[in-house]
Length: 330
Image (cartoon, rainbow, N blue to C red):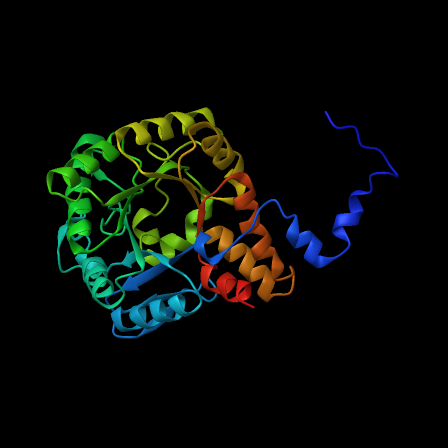
């Protein structure tokens, strides 16, 4: 144990100049750490701003391609795409998720052709496609696990066939990672990565996202607490993560982010696997609205992401990715 005492030790010495602070920083944030979520919709308008998410839009395909070009220019190399589906295409079973002409499949194919080097992450869950807003099949008022898994398998395979580099099951059904890994292996998608939402909590931070994908009205006041995790629990997150790794997940993720950095740290420390965190819509909107209203300095967004890195996150899904990448380039 090193014994340090004042005045021989003055910890402020290395804080005095900016270049020294940067030189000895224990953690760093770079464009390689940032993943930009993007909403894509089958709409005539190029892009439509989401009222509860300042500066974030739903894009049609043409606008999506333009947005990805601008992301590449600032150094973003990974995107996660989410669909906003017309109400007329939603049903009890989320059938449109298995339609090869749905907006996500078309987007993946178009992105693969135009931008072969960008990493494309595709979400596996039924909530954007169901008329009840849940992530699985609803029978007699319950989300049925095993019947849902078969649909998730088929959805994951379709996304891989359409060009997804990373399949990201976010549904929180038991056993879905093994089922998805099995079907990918069976169909020769041996190099397709699985990013598991291993610790996804039943959180109130998801509201703006549900508005963006159009599931908020469908879900209404219903709860996802029977399949998403209790925010009081940490040990449960470790059990979930262990199971997902053993079932074939290559990367695990914690969602939400800021209020769950203890979970990120625990998972990274225990399992030593690539660990991502999702700074979700509610977190982004709180910070961005505060910045735009002058309540907080704009550097609070960078600070929030650096805290994710300090907790152990290897990468961060954040709606501020483009904004922060531009700042890091300066």
